[in-house]
Length: 284
Image 1 (cartoon, rainbow, N blue to C red):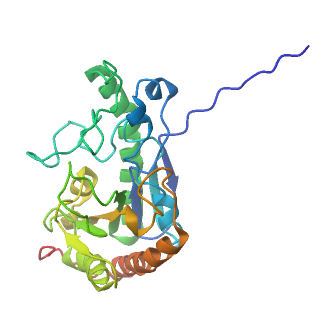
Image 2 (image 1 turned 60 degrees about the vertical axis):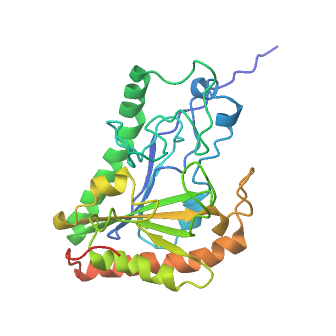
Image 3 (image 1 turned 90 degrees about the vertical axis):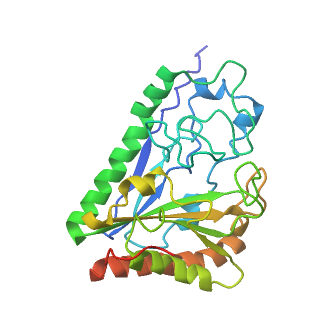
C-alpha cells in the first residue's frame, strides 16, 4: 500500500508587493493573518482569535487607484507589529497602547499562554525576519516611485474596531487621519484627504486625535525630502457586517466607503503628479 506524503505548507514571504507606476504607495502593515504554527501554539484562546487584525483591508482598497503600489505584511501583528518602532519606544507615552511584540490585545487582555510571551532574543529575531523585510520593501517602493515622479505619497491603510475602552473613550470616528501634527506631509496632501472625509455624508472625522500616525507615518513622512506620509484609520463598522467574529465583509457598507476613498486616492495621485506639494503649514 502506498503511503500518503503530506507536503509542508510553505511559509509565505513576509511582504507582498504589487508594483504600480503611480506616485501613491499604499502601506498595509496589519492585514496579514499568517503565524508560524509554533507561535500559534503559544497563544491563548483569546490570542488565537486575532481580533486586532485590520480585517479585509486589502479587499477594501482593491483597485481604487489603478497603478498604485501596494505593500502588504503577510504576518499577523501578534508575531511582530510592523507599525511600531523597532527599538520598542512607545508611540503614545503615558497612554494605553500595544508594543512591538504585544503582550495583550487592544482590550488589555493577555494573548499568550502562561509563560509563553516572546523573549528579548525572540523579538530581535522576529524584527530581523519580518519587521525589517517589510520596511525594506516599503522603503524601496517609495524611493522607486519618487525617482519616477520626483515625489512619493505613502498612504498608510489601517482599520480598527469602533469601540475599545482600553485605548480610547467613546465611539471612534469613521475616519481618523494622522499626520503627527502636520509634520509628515504637505498641507495640500493633508487637505486632499481631510476635506472629502469631512464632506462625506453619514461619516465623522478626526484629525490628529487618538491616532496621530504610527511609526510608519512618522518614520517615512519627510516632506522636505519629497516623501509625504499620511495615516488613515477606519472604524470597522463602516465596512464590516459586525465587529465580531467572523468579521464578515459587508459589500454594501464597503461600497459606500469606497466611494469616498477612491476619489481621495485619485486626488493624491493627481496632486503628486502636478508637483504642487508645498511643505509649509500644518495639518488641521
